[in-house]
Image (cartoon, rainbow over all chains, first blue to last red; front, side, top):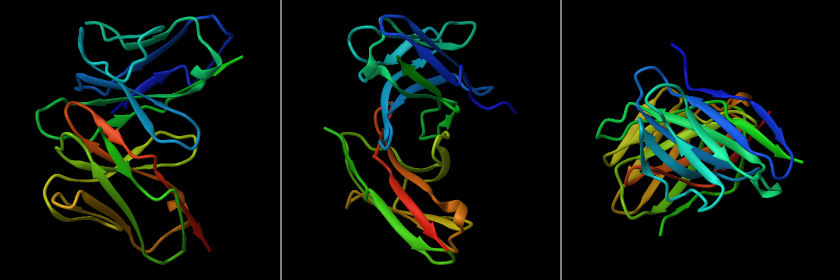
Length: 115
Length: 108
């Protein structure tokens, strides 16, 4: 069974460029979550999506960041006009999305470095 | 607001038992989860509690008291490979709130 797939594993961008991070959830999972992690810190919730819907984006910065989970294809986290402070590990997680609490399964993350 | 507290770092000896505590104050509560994260890797699910009490899974156990807003993760027969960060996470309204993690150092 394929787990949560994220790509690329490492991404280097110069200030002002755009970064696109992709996440394919586990088979059978319809709920996707994005988190950001700085070194030596915990995971910070960014956004929760279902197919074609943003359910909760309360952790997303108001500008430059956007996320989508189209009907077909992976979920995309997009960061426009990147700045040095965007350097972090970005993790995607998925769950089946039932009403009861379910553990989330994480991808290996994308390490974003801004030059 | 949401507040989840864990000790920053702990050290224990191979073969020993260690308890990692977590206290939480969140606006919603539907379960408490524990994850293990090795440096540079993805978090992996260890255990979770929805109701009060102890859940045992091999060398790992997790305890929950909802009235006290308190949980702990118990690791028995520590092995060197258990050196990692342990993340406490509360499942609230549609999202997880993660603590900053406890870095566990296992010494020979």
